[in-house]
Image 1 (spheres, helix red, strand yellow):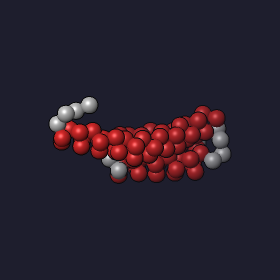
Image 2 (cartoon, helix red, strand yellow; image 1 turned 30 degrees about the vertical axis):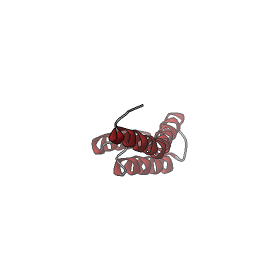
Image 3 (cartoon, one colour; image 1 turned 135 degrees about the vertical axis):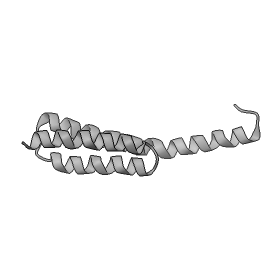
Image 4 (spheres, helix red, strand yellow; image 1 turned 45 degrees about the horizontal axis):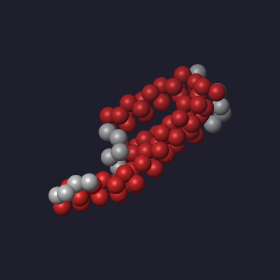
Length: 87
C-alpha cells in the first residue's frame, strides 16, 4: 500500500475505474465471441450479432477502454468474416 497521499488517492481511483471498466470490456469480448461462434457454426442471425458486436466495440472505443485503431481493426476483421459468410 502506498504511503504518499496522492498515490493512495490514485490507487483508490484505479480500483473504481477497474470496477467500472471491467464489465464493459467483458460485454464487448462476449459479443465478439458470440459473433465469431455464430460465423463458424453458420447461424442465421449472424448480421444481428455483427451489429451488436460492432456497437459494443464502438462503445468500448468511445469510453477509452480500447484504442480507436484496435476498434477499427476488430470491426474490419468482423466485416470481412461476415462478407465471407454472406457469399
